[in-house]
Image (tube, rainbow, N blue to C red):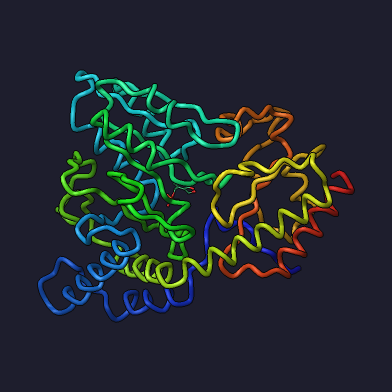
Length: 379
Ligand SMILES: Cc1ncc(COP(=O)(O)O)c(C=O)c1O
């Protein structure tokens, strides 16, 4: 059976150029970057080149980039690193949104258990977090606001630079989880005006298990992992050289191809959207329609079906139900769709289709045909 992969928001394949760049660091260049001899120096230079490549993609400086094991670790480091600078008794307050990934919401819950104050801000029905709601949540003790750049389910881009204005006025720091947006759309730390920004390698054609945190100069972070001082003490542990090299190469690919690939992906996504809309009609809900979205993401709710069952009847298509899962006759609406105000019966037919740089029109047409066929037979 042929397989059509439309789940690039879950993970991307490793790009050929990225794979080729990392291979020598899995074989002949095996040194420890901290070693002061030739083997070590080759690896140190490769790590620093990757840092430069990622910094260039983000419009940041080389020294502002800290490599981590991925989006989850970067988000944990941002939230805990800022909040733990002061004891909970000092009243430190954190603001997050209800549509954040669990790798932000769970550290926030953990901070609550340590005695910190956390406010969770809802989003509007269109999937956007309202900057005024962030402003209303601010307290004199607010130390950090963490709002994702692009939502992983709907692809909706959040008004980060507007939120930054309120943060600056209140003396709070701003972190954004850009795991989904880096490599798909323009992400520049100075335009977004963020203090901290999360990158996840496997969403941008690098391997799983590598990522980075951008930290604006002068932003103090408490050490969360204690060790031998690598990554200037912010993230100790011997560097994952091959994966870091891969992330750097993936950043370079994004720099070289971003506009072209965003255009291609948007054309495929829009074609898929149009075909589904034409066949299903206005009862097909397109989440985030009419607001700024990632060019590759299409989150739709089909009427009168359960998303998982629909996909089970179109096994050629690899996509995500992501949004609503169905277990023991209990329907759980995802945090994002619930925050957008969708009821369980509206969310149940939701699937997330996310295209990639290499997705073809032919694949999109076939996927549309299969999904429409599955829906028409009302699985
Ligand atoms: C928005 C967002 N943040 C964070 C993560 C976690 O990244 P990682 O898988 O690299 O830990 C993901 C992955 O699904 C994500 O979509």
